[in-house]
Length: 134
Length: 271
Image (cartoon, rainbow over all chains, first blue to last red):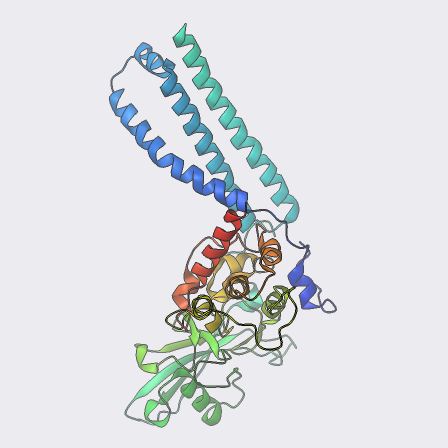
C-alpha cells in the first residue's frame, strides 16, 4: 500500500479509497469461527481419549488410533487446528508487519508451514491407522 | 522498518514542560498536565522542539465544572497560545474530543470531579498533531467521505419525505436514543482502537463503520449491497478484532462494536 507518504498533492480521499475493496474476508472470518467452534467438542474428545489411554502400551495406542472413528476424528481435529492456526497467524502478520515485501514472504511461508504440518500430521495418523488395521 | 515500531521517534519523545501555579493559595487547587507542541516552536538550531507536558495548577473555584472549562480558563488566563478545538460545549459537536486521564472523551462533558489527583490531557492518540490538543483528522474525514454517507435510492424521488416505519427508525435512533444515528463523529472510538492505530491507513475504524452501518441499516436506502461490497475487505472491515475499546470509550454511550458485528453478520448472510 502506498500509504500517505509524500502526499502533499494527493487528495486525502484518494488515499482513503486506496486500491479499493478486495471483496473478500467474509470466508476467512467464517472459517475462523467454525474451526474455533469445532475444536470445543474435538478437544474435549482428545482430552477424554488421552485420559483413557494413560499407561497404554505402543500396541494398545496404535490399535486405538487404528479404529476408524478415532482416526477420522483425529484427522478432523488436525485439519481444524491447522486451518485455524493458519488463519490466525495470517491476521497477526497482516496486523503487525508493515513492510510490503517481507509481509508477502511471511504470508506465503506461513501458509506453506501450516499446510505442510497438516499433511505431515494426517500422513502420520493414516500410517498408524492402516498399519494397525492390517 | 521491518516490524512494528516499539519506541517513539526521537522528535516525538515527550519532555517535561513548565510548572505554572495560578491557584494563588485558592481553596480547590487542581493541576492539569497538558500536552503542548507547536510546529512553530523552534530551538536554537532551528529544529522543531519536542512536545512537552506543562503542569498548570488552577483554582477550581474560578472556573466551571468540566475539563473544557478548565482548559479555556488556562487559555484565557495563563497561556493564550494553548490550542484546542471546541464549539458547542454541550457534547453534541464532537470538536473537543481528546484524551483525558487516559481515556478518549469530550472535554466539555468530562467532569473535573471524576478524576482524582492531577488530570493529564493529551490529543486523541496515534494521530498526527497539528498543534497542542488539535489532531489532524483529514484521513478520517476522507474515510468517512469514502463510504458515501448520504441516502442512495434508485426509486423515483417522492413528492415529500421518504417515509419510514417507527420500528425502522428505531434501528437508526435506538430505543434508548443510543443508535448509530446519534454518533457525533468525535472519533474518540477510532483513535482508541489498537487496530486503527496499526492499520488506520486501510482499516475504516469504528466511527466510520458505525456510520456505514447507519446507511446500510436505513430502510429508505437501497444501496445496501453496494455498500457491503465496498466494505468486504480484509482491512476495511475485518481488521476489527472485537477489542471493544470503541464501545468502552464512546462519550455518547453508543456501541460501534455491535454495529460492526451486525455488518459482519450481513456479510455472512449474503454468502
